[in-house]
Length: 476
Ligand code: AMP
Image 1 (cartoon, protein in one colour):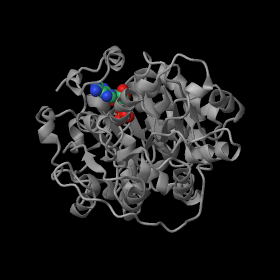
Image 2: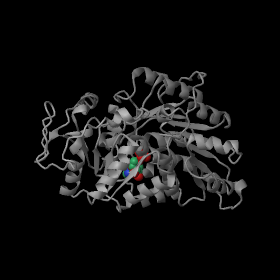
Image 3: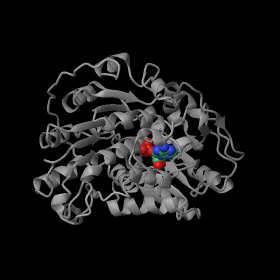
Image 4: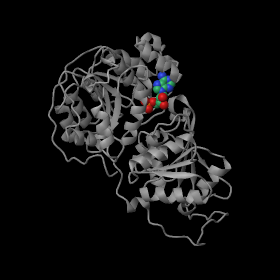
């Protein structure tokens, strides 16, 4: 299928062509016609599938009649609101909206916490057609009366499961109460818990369920390898891998903010340019770190799971798990940073003795055994007594007893995002073949019954949700 068949406006098509997209991704093939048709959508889509364009392109098309070159703020009320869980994702979604709307006089901006409100207020006062926001900061603006949602026609809730994980439900409900009931609502979630279904019930009217059929083998696009290594020697092995393989752009995952800073500093000492990104960094620092990494001026971005959410870098070739994540789903989310949009990637994990169980859990979830590799000088018999590497880089010359980072830090909010690299399947290029969702494993049959499909439309009952604590978006 080509983009021409989707009946998007000339201006939007020009922007798509500029991006070099030749054909729509499966989620786009499904979502775009339905959204153009004014339907509410429940989307089972993960990052890396092209879902941002999947909802943004038809949204722009629907808003195009309102597009105005007038400088008057009155001509630019907020008509579309895109709610996302994290600042990084917010910034990236805004970037996408800007790219796809570049030939349209529609104004867009973003509001998220961790930065001053004043520049955001200035932008909002000038008039905004499309607003990307995190829930907490959006409510701050609403309280200050710098945002009015009474003209919203389209609402997008992106990564809804993560928003619930992060405790945003009360905020979301509050925000919903401030919007016109007559609107189109689009909700995207990688997982479908009872909570998500309840939220969908309150949010969506006769939603159509769409989803991307999962690529059945993540190894087709991403090569996995595991190196068993003593904890004290992980840094030396990391340096060795980066230098010996001449890696130029590596996203390295650690479990804690402290660990991220420490590792970035150590890599710098090893003459590898590195920067850390985590929740304790200010937003400008995070933005700068990401920009430097994208531009290639730093080779390694050391990230925690939460901070890395939403990072979208085209062709990111290498992800290294310096420490395995606490939950196996996070492994999939981490490696979802590579092998995106059909490109190949490599996921390397440095696994020490105490992480063996985590590795087993990951393998169970993936239903594959991750290949274990060795590098001369770094062999380690992890199943028995750990063998010291031949090249001892231990500065003190002693084996230090290091308390697990996991013990020191509270567990990060569980990320259930089941991120998969997008792999276009030619067999999915026919729209009719895409609508049946029976072979998509992320949705149980109970979930499928819960939503309506094109074929059989049932009204969803409205449910009321219990109030829970509002944890807000800060402090990750
Ligand atoms: P997303 O799932 O929205 O995070 O998108 C993942 C990546 O896919 C982004 O880098 C997009 O630029 C890219 N992308 C989106 N749509 C297409 C398409 N039709 N063809 C190729 N790449 C795409």
